[in-house]
Length: 173
Image (cartoon, rainbow, N blue to C red; front, side, top):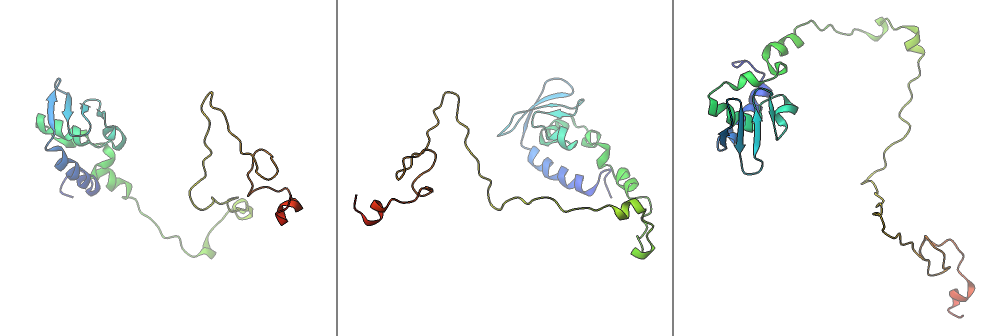
């Protein structure tokens, strides 16, 4: 790796850096800046590693606004990365040996684990978009359906479970 950060972080930095070049930066003091872009005017604090877009805090990686502020100050953006993105951290994470598992017959599994029964999840989500019942606002009247056949409330003619009267079947009253 040619930079002090991982490949993923370098790729992310390049994308953000290209977009931040056209931003206007107004310094408030040495570490606080007001960055103007087309959509969101960002307020960046480089000491606290914060920005109003919140990407700086969530990713722990300089956002576009922070990169624009770094460019104005002519400071290295590498100082504002989290240690998680340094190549040394990546090397230590994968530095220890990983041994193969071996054959299943050779495994030493405790009795309490062997006797434990693991059941599948109890249900499945239904297919499609979830149905949402609208909650009425305060003071709003709830209008219930009235059946045209039986006159009952809460259902309509299609969902009515009352038997059809004989007078309706023949068309005679």
